[in-house]
Image (cartoon, each protein chain N blue to C red):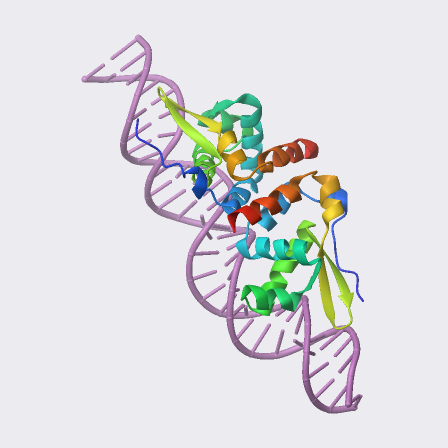
Amino acid sequence: MRALPHPATDDIELTEVLRALSDPVRLEAVARLAAAGEMTCGDVGRNLGVHKSTASHHFRALREAGVVMTKQDGRQKLMSLRRDDLDARFPGLLDSVLSAAHATV
Amino acid sequence: MRALPHPATDDIELTEVLRALSDPVRLEAVARLAAAGEMTCGDVGRNLGVHKSTASHHFRALREAGVVMTKQDGRQKLMSLRRDDLDARFPGLLDSVLSAAHATV
DNA sequence: TTTATTGTTTGACAACGATCCAACAGTGCG
DNA sequence: CGCACTGTTGGATCGTTGTCAAACAATAAA
């Protein structure tokens, strides 16, 4: 149950968040997370049609940017959106991105 | 007075907008554009401390993503934000990004 | 027409990123 | 303990990106 490095709320950088969300695979993953609440890494790999190592890489990018939280749960890991932290740091940003993502699908 | 390629409003892609805004130089340029209304390419180069060819490159990225409009004005070019187009396509997105950019400065 | 100004293009270079595969590591189950 | 499952890490590859410098193009002014 090693502690994974999540940036503190105040350390979340806007450009890194935008960058993390600017990849289609990651944006889709975030949209699904927003709808589903929590997902495993493998779920994303299967649903988005990428190799599990690619999914792992994307989740690291999202985690390091401060977009998602990772919680160990038995032998798998559950990813969840850091909604409150993002809302606190950048009010309205996540919502507008998510609704924009819905609009384009 | 050659017509520069600007994507139609409906063709603006969310991931490309986010990607365009995820570079610190471009985000700063957009924030200044939002405040100043219009700027020349050279203004940005001088204000942001990058070579003019770099500024030109960044403006192309912003233009191709649909974030800015370029208008020829004599021997210089005026860049302006496509606020209305962006608001129409992704409501609230630009505002939340801009206020987030202000918050972090 | 010559000169000065303003951007663009091209080349070069270093850094990064997305992807897959293969090997590894941690965890729970029998 | 050994096996199955889940995710991470490292290597390899291929493309993209940010940057500058230098050459070029377009335009206005003298």
